[in-house]
Amino acid sequence: ASTAYSIFRQGDEDVAVLPQIANAKDVLAITEVMASNGETIATANGKKGLDWIELHNTAPFAIDLTGWYLSDNPDKKPAKWKKIEGDGMIASGEYKVVWADKNYGDLAEGEARTPTGLGASGDPLFLADPRTTKISDAIVLMDSYGKAIKDVSTGFGDGSLVYYREPTPGAPN
Image (cartoon, rainbow, N blue to C red):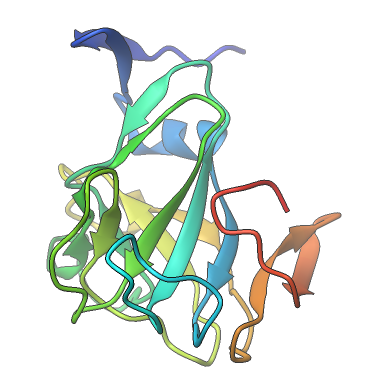
């Protein structure tokens, strides 16, 4: 069965509006997470040490996640989670890094963040549409990203959790 998405024009680009949160899991994946970033990657402004989450858009169109909730805390209602800020646009096929740090500061053009850090114990990650009010409406993008090791990322390889000693933020693993 195919999934229907609404499309609208934003400038010269088609942008998808996902009418139901369940559809997001069909086209979005968390492909890599770093919950203890020391020297691996810096922001466009040169800031180091920020946690990050890499999202991959497999849809044949761009998706804008600005204002969506991204969290590692299932104990709160989605409205208490932190929203994705900055440039939440993810082009078709793109691997987008979302910084996860409450002390990030100013965003550079093209960057996105959620103003909260990631737990070092390997929590689940949830994504929720701004219209979502119940935790049961959110989608689980990752059950656990594993125990954090400094400058080592985690992701999925062959369906199981894999640690990457050479992380690839913004690119395929």
